[in-house]
Every structure is written in structure tokens, then in C-alpha cells.
Length: 247
Ligand code: MG
Ligand code: MG
Image (cartoon, rainbow, N blue to C red):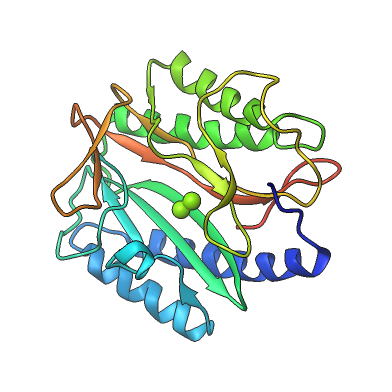
């Protein structure tokens, strides 16, 4: 069942969404060559603490980090550590926060330094655009997989692979609620979208094939062909008109 949030719940999700947005802005500004992913996590932890909030990821099914940092061929769920960012890298940062019992979740992929390849920059650009097109379909009266289809169509038109194993999700009182929001699917299918539904839409797009595998740390998902991957995510609410972005 897809939960419909009340005005008050939407206010609380929007409040935590602002914290998530702030963290991503700060981490984007701080992600330079020489910085470690643990440094970025530390910064996130400070903001979360100052905001009297809590990381939604730390301890989730035993995840050891407060944020996810996924480099280059890493798709999602990379664990912050002593890896130093290098010029030419692309870094996906995923941030989920809970405050007052409500959750928001958002992710970005950013180029590190000024030596990032044109291929990598295109992948980032198309993935961000795929998120934007998906959000445009997230309107009352449309069906859920209209979102999925818009993302898939754009990504595949560029020859990219759309990750199947990880999907977006409903969010609000929990980090992951119904429904699953895949990044692939047929137009005009799936549940009808209604005002007050809150979704985390999150295309994960690979430069090559869509297959992924999980490294021996039990978390880090990488592309099977070790080509690059990008990830963008927003928490949005369906309204009578355009979806409203809460992160
Ligand atoms: Mg996320
Ligand atoms: Mg998510």
C-alpha cells in the first residue's frame, strides 16, 4: 500500500529534506582531490549533529557509514574510508537523514578536479537529466512506471545501462516504504499516482552494461564490467500539479 502523507507529515519530511540538501551542498563544495571519503563523512556527521538529526544509513542492516560514497565504477553503497579523491574521479554521494521520525534521501554524482573525461561528464549529465525527466512524470493521475519509463528511455537512447538490482522507493516514516520505483518499466502501467505520495526517485545509470555485483565488504555495488556509474536522487511529493522536490 502506498501511504498518503498529511500536511503535517509533509512539513516534517520537508524539514529533514532541507538538512539533506544542505549536507550535499557542503560535501559537493568540499570534495576535492586529496580529500578522503572519510573526511566527507565527518563533515556530514557534524551537520547532522548540529541539525539534531540522525543518519538514516548508519546501522541500517549493519551499514557502517553515515553516508554512502561510491567512486567511479562503484554504483551505490560505497563505504566512506581512507580512499583519497583523485583528479578525474567521479564520486556519488548518497545522504539519508531522519529527524522527528521522518526521512529524506538524496544523491548526487560530481566530477573531482578538472581532468574528468568527456565520457564521464556525459554520463553524469544524462543521469541528472533522467532524474529530472522522471520527476516531470511524477504527477497526480500518471502511473508509477511512467517515471521509470522516462528514465529508461533517456538512458538507453545514450547507450547506457539502467541498473535493475537497486530501485527508488517510497519514503517518509521509514527510509524505504512502498512502492518500489524502478528505473525501467513500461509506460502507462503501475499504480496510479496520487497527491501526498512521497517518493525517492533515483536513477543509477551505467556507462556500459546494467549488471552489478557486490564487493567482498558486503556493501559496495560495482558495475560488472567496471565501467563508470552515476546516481542522482531526490525525495519528491506528488501534488495536484508539478511534483515538489523536498531535497
Ligand atoms: Mg539515497
Ligand atoms: Mg534512496
